[in-house]
Length: 290
Image 1 (spheres, helix red, strand yellow):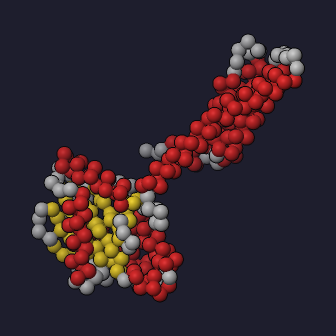
Image 2: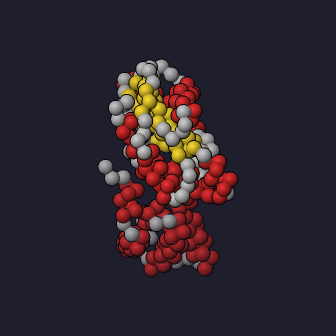
Image 3: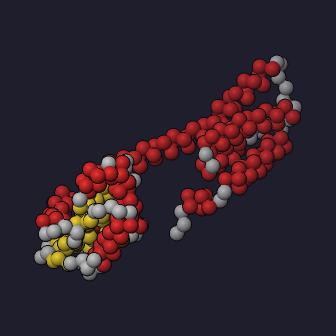
């Protein structure tokens, strides 16, 4: 199902601005037709809020100033007269402050949403950070316990990453990490999650993924990662531990500890491979044919 934000993004800004001007004109006409006895100030907020939300806050502020000016013109045309110029100026300023409120509210909401996003994501790669991943992992454990559903977690370590930093510098190393994160995300469903939990370590959470499906998903992911590393001349590989769980009586720390150990089985066995296990069954190893 398409989200409202997706619908908004599909419509160009000039169209939204045109719609906002049309609505503003309609409110001004109705305001003039009803005369001075009925106030239409509240309805000016509709086009202002629409533009601030669909275009941006700066254009929303411009609509606030435009609305205040139009309101004053309509007020004069409606026959409302004052004893001096000061009431005209004062009322316009007051209306302007009123019209600017939705713009500031939208801006504040977006700022708070941005802060929430920063609290959940890794600043370098844009994927989830370790803290928020733990929260999601606990939710998945709880869901698995309640509904007896299977899920899989994978721990991915970048082999020989220090060589990249030592040879090309940390800037290139950061580029490699961002490329890895992006590559991983392209192989995930919308219900899957990836997080950076260390300097060159990532974890992937795959809900509704059993021990038959996990090798297919992770092997394809590793092949794609290796291909991109080779194409860019980055001499790194990937050691991956994969754990599939069903209704586990296990904590997040214990789960991460187990899948980390599976990854180290690969590290100690020559790197660049995937080691699988299921909870509480015995571990199995599947050799990747490169």
